Image: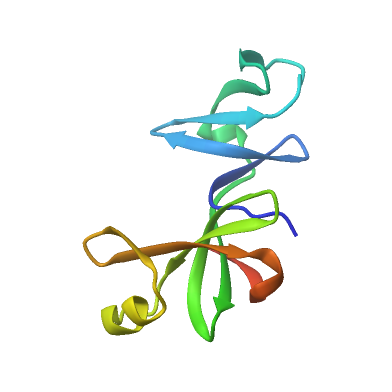
Length: 122
């Protein structure tokens, strides 16, 4: 399962990372796709009218790590960047999580240590 966190849009039978902006949506691809322009070595973009996309949805990946609920923000070489979403600072501190911002606790977790990895879509 790949880790997804952010907006995604369906357009012309495919799904793309997306960035809605009013009546337009920026669609992103990792390789050359017709109509997309290259903005970096592995990033291509196309701006389309919102009315042309099939759907826009926000996707988050969740998991359980060390018995507590987390949102998965990203992944790198078998490690997941996780953010505690249990809402209890003493629990987060007891887990030894890094205080990222006021009330926001994060850590790197081995992908093999997490359980119940699943997506939620809004």
